[in-house]
Length: 106
Image 1 (cartoon, rainbow, N blue to C red):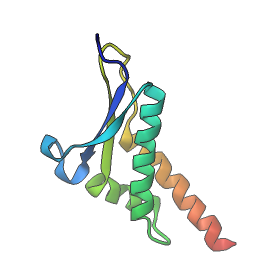
Image 2: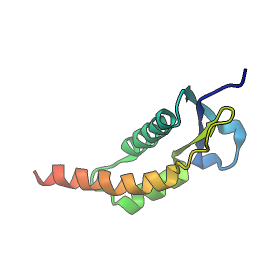
Image 3: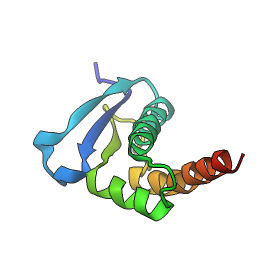
Image 4: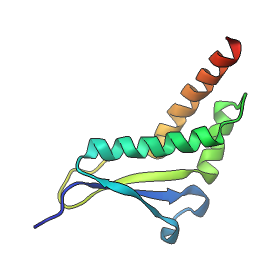
């Protein structure tokens, strides 16, 4: 019987293309659940790196150099995921920094 579901594999941007540095981010029954898990990994990484007053560009630069880079692979015949950790991180850096600025002003 063929496996079904999706696996999240977490690469390390600091060890680019080093498969020995990959870690397991979990296995999920659906692509949506796997992509949500990958987004959580990126969010946690960005929140850990966030410093008060950090500009989105600096936060993203740090992520691309040292952050966790999850990707989603199907187990078996499922459709491929189009999730991009770097694309998601770029969007989230803007949002997170705006949230910090709002909190600082209030």
